[in-house]
Image 1 (cartoon, one colour):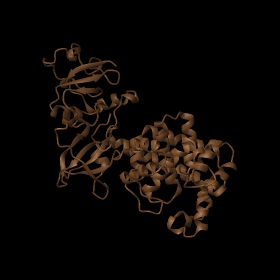
Image 2 (tube, helix red, strand yellow):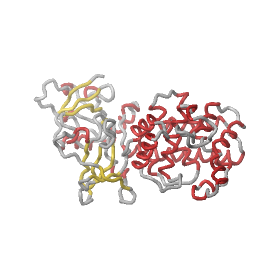
Image 3 (cartoon, one colour):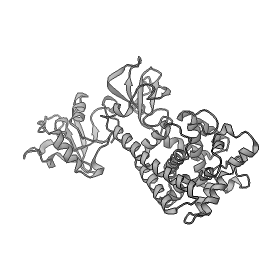
Length: 428
């Protein structure tokens, strides 16, 4: 990786910053590496007192290559940090944005706000595809393998490209009893956990397909029984519990779906302690994919209240999963890996600290899931800060009074538009 140290006056749009001369706690940027895409970013760095920066030439432009620079200005490389370097020529934002647009995608920065907005749009499109798919299956009773493969590929590609935003949208969505919402959410979470534990593309396709189809047996059950409180008799509960086997039968009636997918669907409600259903299958015969699907399926059911209890917050749902892992109902290792994947306080969560301040979670620390990176947006009296304040718990010293998160809030209820707040904040 080719790097160069420059002064703040030589910084310009199109460069990729990979280091600065001040602690990141004292800057308005949430990650240590990011592309410079606007003049506002440069001004914010100057306001923080930044004097020197390191740029990555493999991911952004070099000052000596910028067309705006005149001959003789290639001394921006800072061999003697105490020497002043002339200001770089004025750069028109519109022209600079055009130059950035022509860079390879990997060189372009992206914002948390744009990431969430674009992912929401993409998820809506995929959700319609899942709805159409399940409606077609319910109407015709036929599963078309090529259609399943196309939708599964869409889920996999978009999930792996927008991990944090996908998790956030699952947690904050309005609960819907419709099967397509649950199917897409479980498919998304299964893909994330599958990739984390090392699944290759073929294994992800199998897992994603099974996750997408895991509850199709419910299409053959009276809709009234999909609500837990309506299953009052043993016969009604038994009928509901038959949906994994009904799903297997529907898959068997179609061609192009692998036996692995069928087995995952059949066993996705089994638990390691022998509870769950179907009861004729030994828990030890469950493949890893079934155990994985059980974890993410229960998580989404806890979030949405599908198990007959009120919907849980993300934190409480993860706590419940952990307890079930301790009780040997769920695979404890997969539960732990899942918690590390989604985070106790997922990105885009609105949280309140014990100081009374409120902020938006913008990053995770794998070492301490209770201490994410937060962008403080409100003071202890819940009045907006004139400029958001980033806090990275991981960089705070033991001698400092480290605040704690005391609650997770509903942004809409608190009148906070997360995307608008994050509009000017760079992620990478």
